[in-house]
Length: 102
Image 1 (cartoon, rainbow, N blue to C red):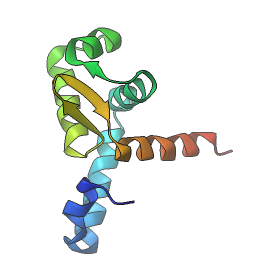
Image 2 (tube, helix red, strand yellow):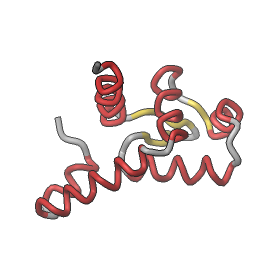
Image 3 (cartoon, rainbow, N blue to C red):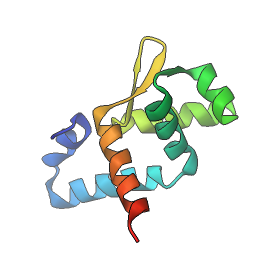
Image 4 (cartoon, rainbow, N blue to C red):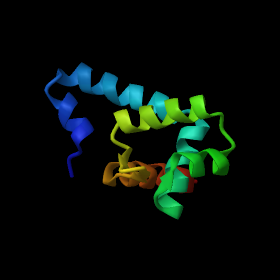
């Protein structure tokens, strides 16, 4: 299973890919980023204002969050709706697996 975001970094050499993964994990260290992913995964597509109301986030912060998640191909925007990508679902399943570990 390959994803667009990973494909862009595969030719960067080992350190380039490792650095890109570390940057993505740093992005995921923000609880609101995880919250957006989970919300979209559990409840399906949402528009910006629906996300803002559900998460009670300032529009600027939400906008930055969505841009970062899109940069890592975790979510995408289709028309006016945000959805979780297959890669985002895969990342969430890995996170869930970590949480379930003893």
